[in-house]
Amino acid sequence: MAKIGYARVSSKDQNLARQIETLHNYGIKDDMIFKEKVSGATIEARTQLKAMLNFIRKGDIVYVAALDRLGRSAKDIGYIIQQIHAKGATLITPELPDFSQIPNPGLRAMFTEMMLAVFKYQAEEERKRIKARQREGIEIAKANGIYKGRAIKYGPNAKKTSRSVSLGECS
Image 1: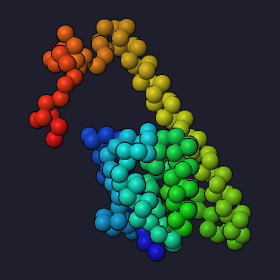
Image 2: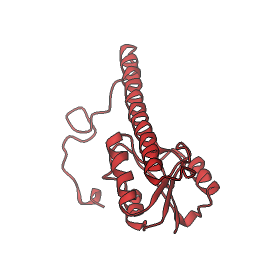
Image 3: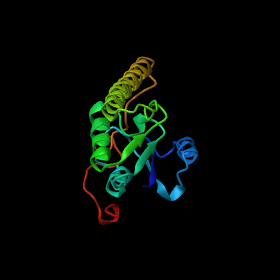
């Protein structure tokens, strides 16, 4: 049985320190923490998540500082948890109550699934709220003439007039 941690932040300028400290408090060593700085909006680009899912074995315990570190949609979080359970591993997060004292495994599993459903819903709703606040901020900035949108990459008014790629840009 191994203790394995997973930590993720959404962008390169964010810091993993808080999550790593939480994982250290569970007794997880640095070499057993899969870390990445990538959006949780989709699973495809998350190489460390995929590596962690490939690494875990039956009896392992996977720790995350918060359930939303696994993903932002209930569907993705559910899929990742399903992958962890399919490997015979267990997921632990400080957000979930400890049902280990419940002697009936079926009842324990039912309570865990109910709590996971609630937290998956909360993670997805938080993502929606973030997007809504972002849209509102952009609309306010546009109305005040502050936000002009992303700079045009290609075209007559851009630095590059076409989308052709030179050999130097391929590396």
